[in-house]
Length: 121
Image 1 (tube, rainbow, N blue to C red):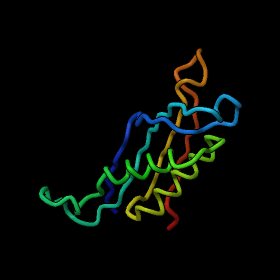
Image 2 (image 1 turned 135 degrees about the horizontal axis):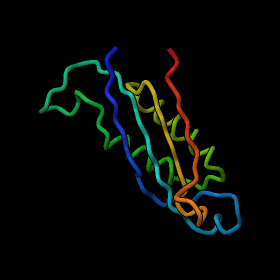
Image 3 (image 1 turned 90 degrees about the horizontal axis):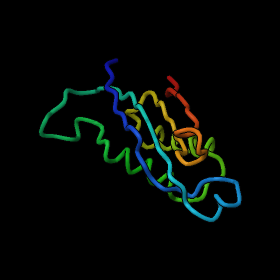
């Protein structure tokens, strides 16, 4: 099967995430990196976006999943985003997702969680 890779690099958003007292009171920035291997079922028609996975829809799903409610653990959020993408976009075969908190520590650029999941055959 032929595949195409769609990726987002450092999609930035503010989310209600964290378990510490100060994290429960305010949003904090997240950076999201994702690679999606998408099964190619038809040739690309340059005049018809329906012949490809519209990455605007993927971005909207990621943003909504990350901002719809407070999540205590980044591990939980990674799982929720992964499940949402697999559920909403059946053409996605494999997901590599990394969500990081760029302001978690002053002595490093970011800390986060990465996951890789493939759709079960």
